[in-house]
Image 1: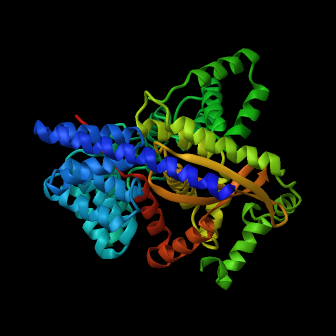
Image 2 (image 1 turned 135 degrees about the horizontal axis):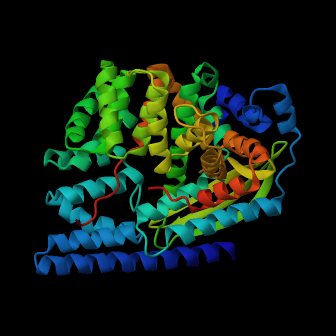
Image 3 (image 1 turned 180 degrees about the horizontal axis):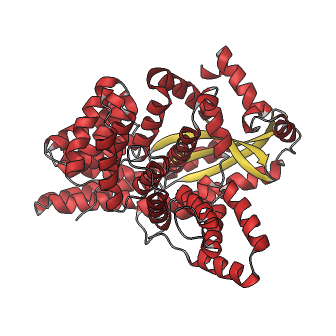
Length: 280
Length: 218
């Protein structure tokens, strides 16, 4: 009985899947008729967005075979995440390499990260650094941040804290929350920059406003203590509530501590501000 | 087979005994060891809700797949005992890591874990999530079996190991195809740390969480 139920389920699944592939093939044919590779690419993306990864793969594969850089990149995403196809990171990297060779920067960025994440040796770290230098120069905040952290850590045998901080700063200036938080910590600890509690607080606040949980936690404690910025219990409670609602344990303890000594209307104000908070 | 290596068997026994949730103090350890087991019905509901949320959120119209996955990742984060799993994954290296490294590791590890499972749970167009039942494990855990199918994949058997932590059921391990993810991660991380130190492991996790998404039409 159970086997039959599973069999029926699999048969239905295959039917639905088959329909998706047929639809994808139809779109390919139509796209071929009017020469619209852009149309086919867009249909592949629509299928991807709908979770029909098999259809997306079916559409993008012929485009990638013709050398379309966007299709190569997206096909690499499917292989890298095992969506619509068995996960195959070396295949994803090969596709990204082909796209990167055509100047596709996203592909170059993801290729660099795959070199770090999957090969993880000195040679691949150095290769990743070279790729990231290109994408960082093209303005990708993710690349600037990744490269900055690698140079700070000295992976790949290249340790340059000052250059690393500069890259992190570039990403932070673009509003990249992880970089803003990282910069906050650098100023807090005087790591690669002159120690400054004020600058640390500024960057923690920027990251907190963009939704960075640890930055929210740090900002709450700083506001409660008046460390690097003026003491403000209402704002402290607001940020502590936001962090506590996401499971940060010591933020919850701070909520309890502050709530015990603050006036009821101040607590209500902080609660209202926390409830109204939306990351930038 | 991963589970039967002697060192890893010890590691698995440590998960079962609650050592890695202890906060490494005898009092906390004692408290963990006497914690009540998640009831079977509650455990099944917990995982059924997870499956329902995955399908509801990840298949929602009107938002991009990246937005849907971000919402689901936030929901998923609350269901995992990240501190417990992260410490277990780092093993003996947890103690030698600086406070800053511990914090950074847990942040990245948490992000990586939810990305991984959100991707596994998917948003596939014809996805099905079936709960198969619950069974007791060790002195305090409950394992809920499930099967995920759809998207042209072979069905995947996923076992969720739950423990009552701070009065709430939380996921402390996930078994995929009979292999414990916690133990697999611990083994992989140990090798990475031996090669490039904790900084190297953190860099790998960072690389796994900073990839750019698929490209759409401009």
